[in-house]
Length: 173
Image 1 (tube, rainbow, N blue to C red):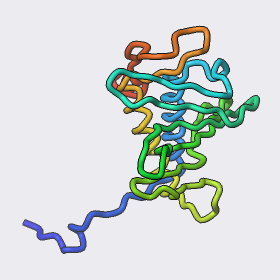
Image 2: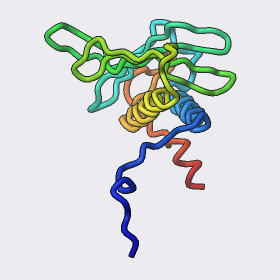
Image 3: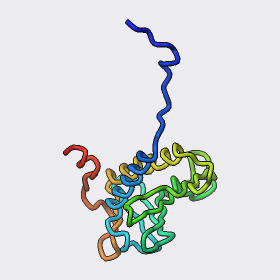
Image 4: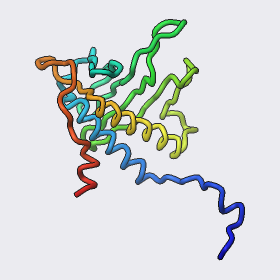
């Protein structure tokens, strides 16, 4: 029987590459399309998705161009200082490439002013991977709760029925 050195037993930090990050961007785009089936129909004011037994999910559109849309998704909470958004994630959607990445993220638990800004040069590939992986998991959670944003001409509240996660469906067959 071989005995491992103590250094081998330590958990090794996983190194992520650009391909993995691009796969997360693609997954985030797919999940956003499930959450917001028609980006063009969402007004600049955005909207609120109400799902039974879940926090209201708030959407605002800050920028809309031919090939990109920048939007913010958040919940609204209250504390002794008033109302605040959390996680307050700003997302840039690249329609032509079918990718979505986190541009900025504010508010970590207990820290009102904490922010992530992807345009800062000191963020590593790993930091971008972590924040976009968080978005991927959060979008999946929102979809499982029944959140959907519909156009103004349809009912904008309540779940739109269960849409299967495309990535899970694709991985099974």
